[in-house]
Every structure is written in C-alpha cells, then in structure tokens.
Length: 256
Image 1 (cartoon, one colour):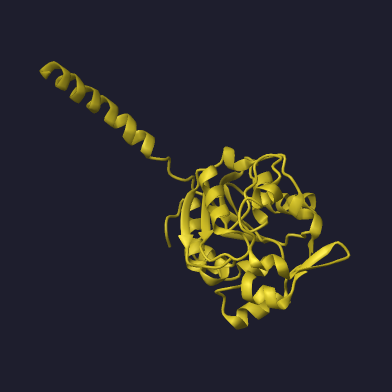
Image 2 (spheres, one colour; image 1 turned 30 degrees about the vertical axis):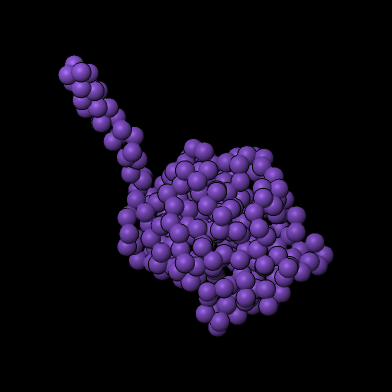
C-alpha cells in the first residue's frame, strides 16, 4: 500500500507540469493591423464606435466596405484590404461577415480571427441547414426581397436587428443599411481558417438575428476564446468597449 501511494504521488508530480502546459495557451502574436468586415444589411460605418478605441491603442484599422453582392465579391474586397496591410493582422467580422473571414483568414498575414455574433462555417458547410437546427430569430420575418436583393423592414431592423441600440442610432443605421444579395446566405466556403488560426468569439445573449445557442455552438466548435455580452445582434454598436477589448486581446494588446 505504501509503495502504491509512493508511485501515485510520483506519477502525479510527473503529470502536473504536462497538465499545466496543456492548460496554458500561447500568447497572441502582436498584431499591427485590424481589418473589420461588416455583415448583411450594414456597411462599414457599423464599426464606428469600435474604431476609435482600437486606433487609440495604436492599431492601424481598416473597415472593409463589403459589397454583399456575392460571397466571392465580398471575399475579394477583404483580400484587397488585407493586401494593403503591412505585417501581422487580426481579421474581425460581424454576422454574415464571419463567412468571409473564415475563407480569407488562411492568409499568412492573419494572426487571429475575431467573430462578433458571427457565422463561422466549416469548409463547404451548408450553413442554412445548420442554422435550422436552432430556433429562427424574429428578424427573419422582416426580410424584404426585390430583384434578388434583400433589406430589412424598418420595424424588424429597429426591434430585432438593432435591439439594445439607442433609438436614434438604430434609425441612423437603418438609413445606411446596404442591400444584400439573397444568394449570399447559401454561399459555401472552401476554407475554414479557424481550424488553423487562433479564434475569439463574442456571443450576444439577446440576439434576435442569429440564435445565441448557435453562436455558442460555433464558438465551442472552433475552440474560441469566448465572451458573452448582454447585447443584441449589434453588440459592436451597443457594447463597443467590450468588443474592442476582445479585438485588442486577439491583437496581443490585452485590455485597453
């Protein structure tokens, strides 16, 4: 019995450093740049609350004007923005923009991926089918399609897409919402950069656009460093400090 206890203690001591090493993840690579990709029914101004915080921390920030006409067009726009960056870059996406950074994020310049209430499809995944495994957000009833492009009705935008955002700001965002091709939602990626790049995820607990449990599923699947925010879908507008802090962490800056 005594010998068994001795062997057990010895084995525990040998195992302890291995367990600790496994629990500790490598610190993020220090990035110089951040490229922000907006989602459907929005434009680059949706990042306007987050950008000054990142710039004040010393980061070079670029907001992509995502055309939302097709997955390939949006990927090309983000690749052009990425090509202009000098050195390590963190790619950040909101909502449908997560599809884009999952495709583009394999670029050697990209040191980390940040998903803000965003899609994070696997390679060639049918994301529409995956989404149907979770309750549909009420925003869906407000989608209006014309000539192959979609917009949200004002009622759906203000109540469900921008829930938690100050009414004046929500109306401003409604005014600049960008028409989004109906076809992009079924678009499939040929890459899933989160398999090979460190990832971070901000779940919006009060999201009426993407189900919060779907967001949690995606974050867990990619083994992302995850935060949960008491926010609706537009957490980048209603909780810019928390969103910026997550981006700063991914860029190796810690919290501002």
